[in-house]
Length: 199
Image 1 (cartoon, rainbow, N blue to C red):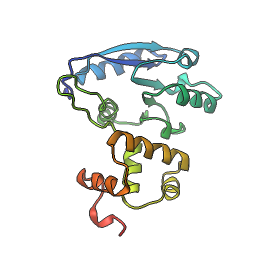
Image 2: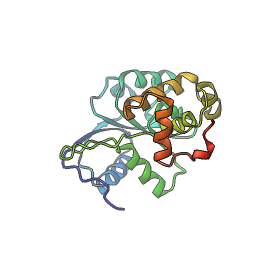
Image 3: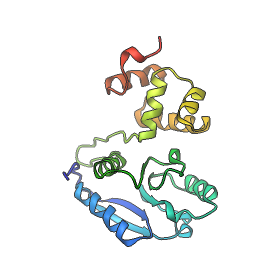
């Protein structure tokens, strides 16, 4: 495993994970990536619903008790930072910045954690990676290829409101407000091929 960050400042991370072994493993990976992090622990849904000011929340799906739909809605309402879910295929993946599944291979897990923390600003250089989530990249590709919100929702099996939310987040992160601008961005970053763009 290689270090990918050279930030000299600490980041604040909440681990909403009940199992000690799983918490320790996540902390180990984050430190191996070269991130200097302060970790805060939450072990039940009531603590989580009280809120956290940390920029990063790593959430284990077993913390979200039934009724899951209500608890997911609460999390979506009170938490404004980035959320990485350690979950299963039945969870609403579109609510999170990324999801680690039990079936993921080691390299996939490391890449997802790297991507999750990619929005960290380096205090020395002032540079910041846009920190676009996997789902936002999916949305960006479809927007750049000329699909409507409804078409994107149908293709990705998510609601139109979710598509609109992700598009708004993309606009804020990239500072690009037009479809043509998003298309150029997608082309320049090799997310799509020029021949696939609708005329």
